[in-house]
Image 1 (cartoon, rainbow, N blue to C red):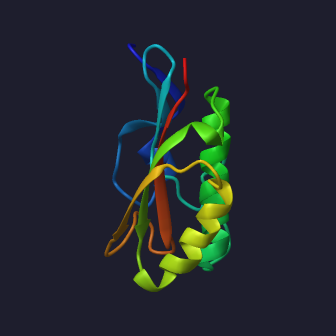
Image 2: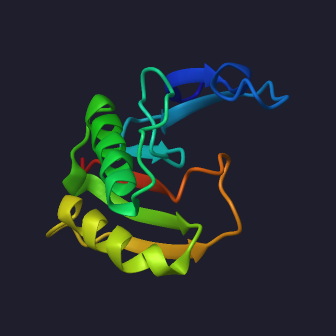
Length: 138
């Protein structure tokens, strides 16, 4: 393969309640090893795909951002290498709490960021999903 696929999985295993069968990865490190693309991170454990047991947007955001940090580091980067975040919220009233919490993880980093309010995420209990791109300098 042209790029490194990190933490590969199939959706039939992670979403057994849905009729899916897609080969995906949590992260892709582009050829050359300098750009890391993360899939949207949700409030679930990276190893077990189990959701955290909280409907609090702050707790969910801590888990999401912890997953982003863990994946970036596993791929050879650091949070300071994050260049772009896309935030998906199911309720605009959670925006301040989510962004304040997210800000704890990107203090001094200054990535670009896009925020969207969506009708729903892949699981109804998820309030926030964030995807990230990181670029490791040469």
